[in-house]
Length: 197
Image (cartoon, rainbow, N blue to C red):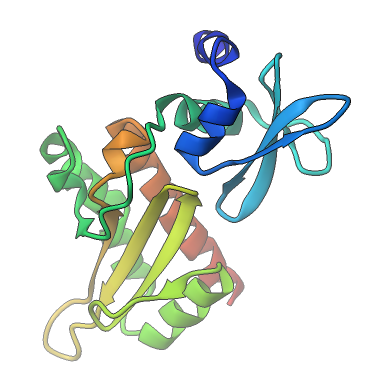
């Protein structure tokens, strides 16, 4: 994380904001970016590139690392509005089977035969309805990283299935391993929401 911070310190924060979709603000005290992660705002202040939550409280190191890496890698590539599986992202084929096991397959097991429950939890988490499968929603991990979570009901004859999809541009904003992690986090959020439902 120290290397990422140092690299960001040398860059113009206004340019970083433009490329990443973050909001840029300058006050007498500091220059800062506001960056949303799962619809929750975080503040990144220059020149020290410190990360904190919107209320000023500290931010957990893993979240800091994810936010800073996103800001560092973001290159401003427009969204392609084309959903693809992890397999179809650069170098994604190697990870696809394991990723499906702890993402889509997990969702299919937890929401077995419950499309309505899937919709309720996805809506509560801020998902935006899509028209794919029997139920699907778009979630924003970052301003330029949308994910789609799709659920297919197998009915009485076939098992249910689910899959996490990414915009085709996702590789311009995070490394593949981190994209897989982000997809896993989304599924964990859904499972957590199911347990509260």
